Image (cartoon, rainbow, N blue to C red):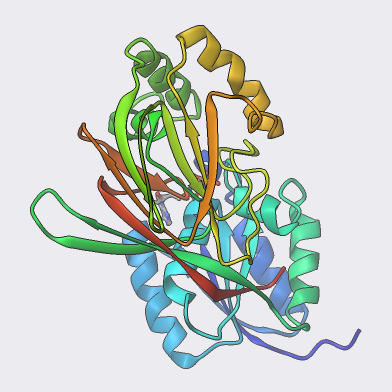
Length: 306
Ligand SMILES: Nc1ncnc2c1ncn2[C@@H]1O[C@H](COP(=O)(O)OP(=O)(O)OP(=O)(O)O)[C@@H](O)[C@H]1O
């Protein structure tokens, strides 16, 4: 295959996977340059600064933006590129890498992922949906952001919020500690979920919306979700005992929970989620804002090199 040189912006999160994969970014840059591409490499001390410099770099209309990191970095890419013609490349180096899993990008073999990126830079991109989230912050400020993978508005969001507030431990065990702490107080919340013109009112433990199949490193919460069908898949888990809740977990990993009578699966283009308790939504593993949230699918808004 002949390689046409491209102008590529590479945005790197050196802290992805708790810093364990910090060599991946430099490897991507080096390989793309060796292929003859013109590469602008971006690394910043934090996510906000990276978003800002990447936004500026995109003014030069590059041929692609490549993100190196986990789903949080994919989220950065989606928010910069949705609605534009610039495609997003992904070299997964995060903890979960669920977007890469959903797109068939090797998530456990960096060399293979870089090789695939090199090939896809020479081919037409794949077009997928993005999802717009709207909410209002506690001080009344309206918020808007996009996601590509999944949004959590139930127990897993509560665990995420607790883990975010903890300073220690530094590694993934923080999530396990947060999960154990929250599990002790596991109780259903009262939700009102509007799905297009339909309204559901129910007590639930989990409320998740998937554009992609999985979250949390391969948990197939919405196993039938398609990235390009113009629809969002919704999963709600009704009240369960702690033991039953833990039992259903391994089935979720395999996507075998959807026939369980305590699980409700729905599809919609627009979704509003309200709850009778203070709860912060998470999307692509990133903190979004307090419920209620309004979601709307943006069909075909994103081009990806996959
Ligand atoms: N220098 C930095 N550049 C970019 N992001 C950073 C940086 N330092 C910390 N972060 C944080 O990293 C998070 C994104 O992590 P990312 O998703 O890339 O990896 P991960 O969490 O290990 O993987 P996954 O989301 O797939 O589980 C963001 O919340 C962001 O705030």
